[in-house]
Figure (tube, rainbow, N blue to C red):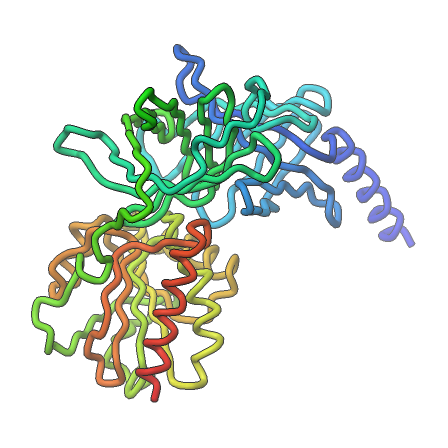
Length: 408
């Protein structure tokens, strides 16, 4: 009886603590640059689910559930799913949070100031003027134009019907910028994304000649200009020709440890006479996260027909235990049943050295599809996820057609 009374008492205390934080809609702001008052906003809601304070972050159609939370009388701390980042905040009443976002994958400039206020609010606090759909289209985009670092992208933007809310993304040769959401006001465009890893802010204005001039900010340390012009026929280079096998006839092999510290090789008995997808990835990589979600469904659909998937994780740490923990969190989040091996290496250069049969790794993820004899049939650089719409649909159709052909 005494234990039941204690349990009920503790439950009541927990509910009282939760009552300090308002349930409903919140608007969060990351202060990217204090001197310029440069803010990256995002929206989330808070609910109490089974005595746990749960956040749900909104980026256009995306919903990110955050349930690794600790709420006390004077603080609210929460860890982002998958990525090694967290928020540490103080409470002011039940409607204001102030604190920092910490990105543990970075060694320098990894702390950004954060505030959040309760109450339904637009993502960007800008005048809501008459609807102006100038940006709704496909754009040929150049980042850092007229420099050695110049790169091309495809921008796709659209208004949410009948509103000034704009959604869209950028497709690049190494992946997409995922779900961007924002506002159009007075001919200016504002877009942002926060998913625990990406902290992206885009601003833009249109010019007299109907082009776009903009600035892209990433976190608190990076910014670059970008320009755009309407071009529905513009295409990026073929993602299946950027990374390739040095010897097209080579049968490849590799060996790395799994999360149980067991060495796994592509030549192992369990992979013989199997069609193989090799995912070159990292748990820190948002595009890899999107691809992992997709490959998890592909594995479940085709595994019994003879398909295996092997992830090769290039984490931002050489500590095996920390890398293992990162991978286990990823696997738990998406219900991954296939092997993800821990290479113990970091970065594109080390990935290229460890896979010498390729001309080099230019992006995470990079995906290889092998036939039953383990000859490479496709190498795909980057990943365009569900935020890209048609590009994602086309990729999944083409990939699954190839899988079915190789399984015959």
